[in-house]
Image 1 (tube, rainbow, N blue to C red):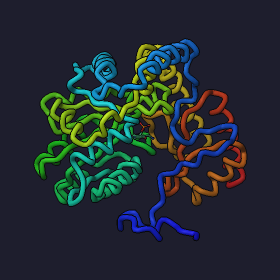
Image 2: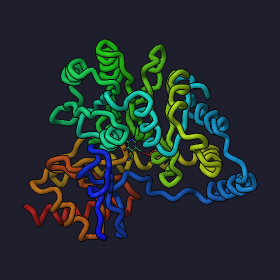
Image 3: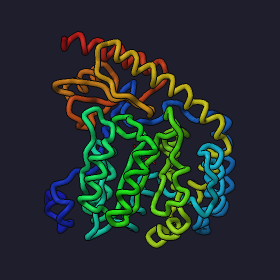
Image 4: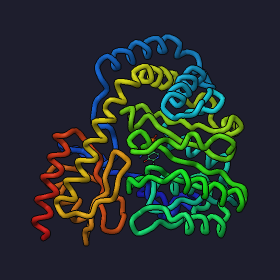
Length: 368
Ligand code: PMP
């Protein structure tokens, strides 16, 4: 019998929907999912192996449910880089920041509640909202993809959402959100409900500006979410984390599955954190490559959105998907996020970026 999803008694809000799916194609140059292009350095691979071997001996036991050692090290990293003291009581970790976001929506969203994001933005905010039964509200953005504080605050005042997502730098546009805008939206959200404001800083290490961690002071309904998938070059590890008031850390534990972070994940993340300085060296290189991509795409006559992330949004194309295909035909995979007129490319190694730039210049010539 040939059955599809919609032949099953799935929840109404899942009918006719497709799963999140950036294509995972086997092509020479993959610049489509904002990964870090540099493999982990060999000494770190050795250290991971050591730590995992140690953890393997205890796999008959459940892992540390509260991930105490890992949260302690994450707190140290945030304190060192975020210009704000963060303790273990302020930090929570999960399998990627996607799971952090899911736990936040399970805790503060859910049936009868709503979340807002300012689109185009990270599509998983809307998808995880749907998956947790949280109503989704699409908030506005300016034509240049910056946030209009008045319009965004008005949307918050009108819809009174339970959760407000602010992604900075924003994906897929690369746009940074100034601290004053976040503060204004926080005030608007508290006046309207009060509600939780989640600042998604997945790409903050690549930003020209500083983290918004200092805004946590005196704001218990603010959460900063982070990941080791991008700057730490460890997307395969699946480790995301948040910083917030200790009450928020207590609250998400109401919904987390017991032992959600495996002993292998905790051991691997701890090894990576021991090598923070080496890993973050690549960030400087990627920022320089990001700036080069912006400059060269502009020199090629394209419309390029200002970027604070490890990727660049470029256009404008009448038919972005056709351009995506032509670039792919030249062995380079970029991303069509469905933003009208635009595509997105992640900063790769200098050689990968050269291959991408050559492909784009050729395609542009064909189109002109
Ligand atoms: N937030 C944003 C803005 C992202 O772009 C991504 C990944 N593309 C994530 C969160 C999730 O990352 P992860 O689950 O790998 O931590």
